[in-house]
Every structure is written in structure tokens, then in C-alpha cells.
Image (cartoon, rainbow, N blue to C red; front, side, top):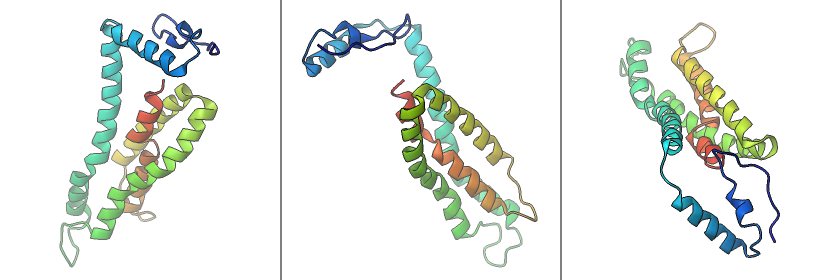
Length: 175
């Protein structure tokens, strides 16, 4: 007999406990999934799809819109460049575009471990706060005498990558 687990309420039924008396874990899993498949489609499903869709859309938009942003950065900040005026240097362009992927590697390890220790719901909330903060910080980034716009964008994009879509999928998919 499988060990009963805590959890479950009116919105989230704990199917694991319904089949805890069945010893075979594969049969238990099959029966629980069959029960979920029989559930009628309702507003809860619509809400879950919309919430997950909005999160994935905004995160993916931030990741993939950078191609347009780097073109605009070239026009704004490199108008008087001696070679290729109005175009961002290729090293800066590549660094800005790769920063999110580099942060994702760090985030998968760190946030995955923290989600197991602290809890997935807490980490999902923290992840959303960081995404909102990093996205706003990227939008407000500008050049200054102390720091270049490229350096600031790389920093914020690494932070964005740490809590990017892939982390969101890992955490939200298991809630």
C-alpha cells in the first residue's frame, strides 16, 4: 500500500490518495491519469491556461524581441561610429543576445534546487517578482558615464535568464 499524501482541496483534487490502496505504482498512476482525463472542462481549466499562457508569452517576448532591440540600440547609441554607423558592434550584439541563455543555465541549477528545498509555490512567486523587476529594469536601462548600456543590458538579461521560461515551465508544471 502506498503512503497517503497531504494536500488537495476543492480546486486541486489529490488523486494519489484515491488509489493509495493499490500496490503497483504504474497501475496507480494509470488510474489517476484516467480519472484526470475524465474530468469535465471548466472555468478552472480556462483560468489555468490563460495564466500560464500570459506568463510564457511575456517571458518569450522578452527573450525573442531582443533582435529588434539591438537594431534600435545601434541607431541610438552608435550613430557616429567610424565603421558601420548606426549598427551595434557584433561582439556587443552577440553578448546581449546570449546573456539570457547563459543565465538560464545558472537558473536551472539554482532554482531547481531551491524549489525542492523551499517549495515550488514560493519559488514561483519569487520567480515572477524577479521577471517583472528584471523586465522593467531592462526597459529603463540607458547609457551613463559609469556604465555602458551594453553592460547593463547584459546584467539584466542574465538575471532574466536565471528565471526564464524554462525555469517557469519546470516550476509551474509541477504545482
